[in-house]
Length: 278
Image (cartoon, rainbow, N blue to C red; front, side):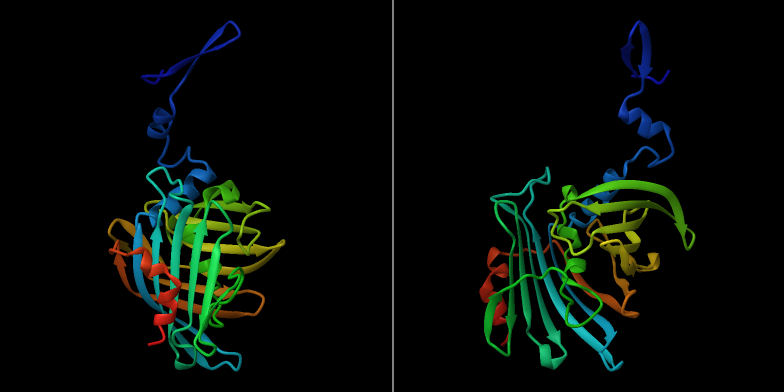
């Protein structure tokens, strides 16, 4: 019998059941984890960055097949407490500003993820010189194969989906957990289901497949060699998104990431979008 086992009465028979901690210690690493627990570890890895400022570029092609480079800046702040609960009705805030090419320069987006009411979502268009309230769900980022949903995955709520662990697999020699997340009807995601292939040591997805109403629509691949440590959080610095319906692809490069900088609430205000045009 395992040390510290819990005794359980079953009728007149006595059954010695090991504690959860003993099961985790005795079985191979991760063997006892559920799909939800694995996905939670993936989200918690990213949330080690309570704040983050990053710059990157997305390489894609326009409608005529010409190469295009979209450059962006992003700031994010997580307001959750140590138990992952929202604080003052806030989960997180994210602001994204485009800095190139010239024709879309200083376009900006603000996303406020709330628990007490519907999320706030705003955009700033330099051509109109005003901020508008919009819905970012399913919208492409500057015509690339990445949508805003893809950018905001780290603000997802673990309760937005039901999880199912599939048999483990190996991707390019790296063992991965495989977890299906089926979105609940009230979830805000543009996708109805995802399947994530999550690297076992750092809980970073090396591959994610996306479905919309039963149709597989996109695939994201992040090479293990491009995963880097930023203040204890493991982040892919290169990811390739393929649109399976349009047969197009875009590659995102994370060029700079400042982990846990000091960010003020003002850094996520509407005035920041307006100031970006200068």
